[in-house]
Image (cartoon, rainbow, N blue to C red; front, side):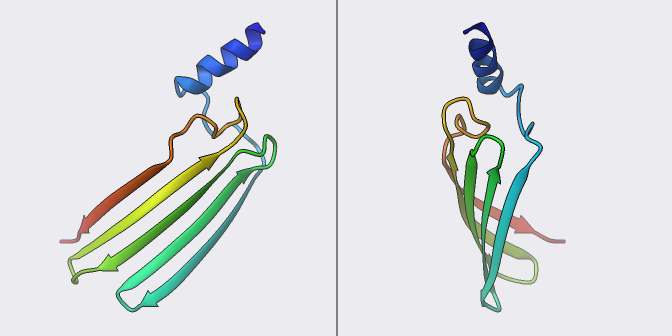
Length: 97
């Protein structure tokens, strides 16, 4: 019981992160158009079966700028590595000079 509480506290406070030793990652990249690319990736911790899926789409707006949209979904049983992370969406812009 005390160990379970300690592990939960460490996971929730970000003290334990990426401590697994056995991961499986699959990634698929697709060039939709010469200016648009999409990447889908899947990562699984084989030891505790926690996992996350990520999707990102990038558009090359010009020679100096690209914009993108992405998201991540985290899955896992309680006290597994990725169970506490919230699902997320993001927008990014990259400027090159």
